[in-house]
Amino acid sequence: MLPPPPRQPPPQARAARGAVRLQRAFLRGPLGVLRVLQLLAGAAFWITIATSRYQGPVHFALFVSVLFWLLTLGIYFLTLLGKHELVPVLGSRWLVVNVAHDLLAAALYGAATAIMIDQTQRHSYCNLKDYQMSCAYHAFLAAAVCGGLCLGLYLLSALYGCCRRYQGEQDVA
Image 1 (tube, rainbow, N blue to C red):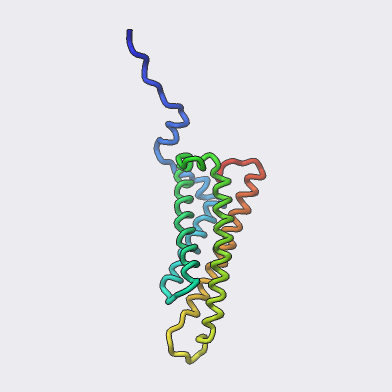
Image 2: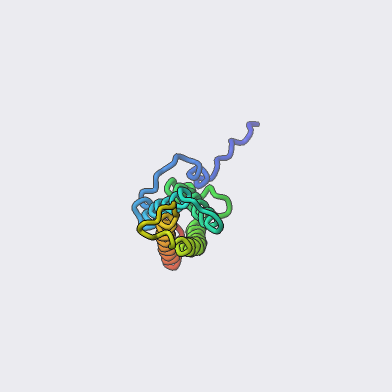
């Protein structure tokens, strides 16, 4: 008697491990554009901070910006390549994961922006025309603006995700 033929994996499992396909609908959609803008504004935020002389609570702002820049980069590429199903437990709830990420990022970017505004005000003494010493005022001001932009972009993408969820959608794109 011959052994039974080998079992075939379910079609869905084969599709998840198959070739990588670029999700053009996500790339051209509002959330894809918002993710790219978040990455650009987040990079501007942390590069601006990292190139200035900083101390104290600015370390937290730098941590928040780098953390969410990396998380956003990961979420962007997982969604763009259509591989979010491979994320254990969370892959089936990808839209909810995106909304939770955006809300948490907005909250922490709000705190980071407040820190940068406070640091800008503390360094406002060196915003004089003839001040000769090096000063981080302009870097902190630029970081505060970038932080506010990041806050707005993350809130906008969270609102978009909530609207999609309310409409009964399960997919990001």
